Image 1 (cartoon, rainbow, N blue to C red):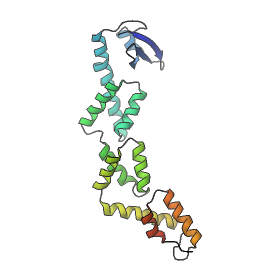
Image 2: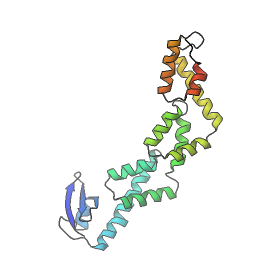
Image 3: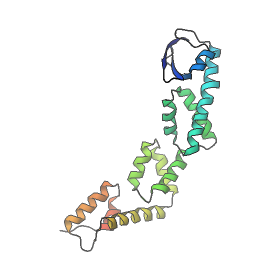
Image 4: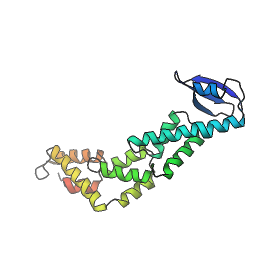
Length: 205
């Protein structure tokens, strides 16, 4: 295989392009060590060393260092590694490595997020947030099923009541227009209609 181009990423790192459409990042010292130059041939032995000993080791360490500070979903880790210009096969192997030790687990991440955000966000907001982090719909649903349904309902209803108090809403004396406005506000926050009507009451002109 042939090196088709080498572009600078920073003062210390460069991006290497191969004629196989593969690209990856190496330190400039590694370019010298492995004699990587534009238009030069790379032997299979050199390629295997770069993939299995240099890049895979680095990707594993990158994942471990990221996970030291907080939890990440698999999708979030993939994004981080892609930003580091790791090939997909290296990304797959690095994530499989940390997952084998239980360091990355989307189901656990979803459960923890539901418990953490349940007192400040509606279920729809939580589901949307988890989906944006790459957690599948089935995993989110399963995480909710594992959480105590009673606790989940109570937390969401308590959140609605706190929002009503913050807005100084009095359901006994609220006008039709005030009720409609509050219902719209809660609906936009992601609460389901049955919980909204339970807290606000059904508006009558």
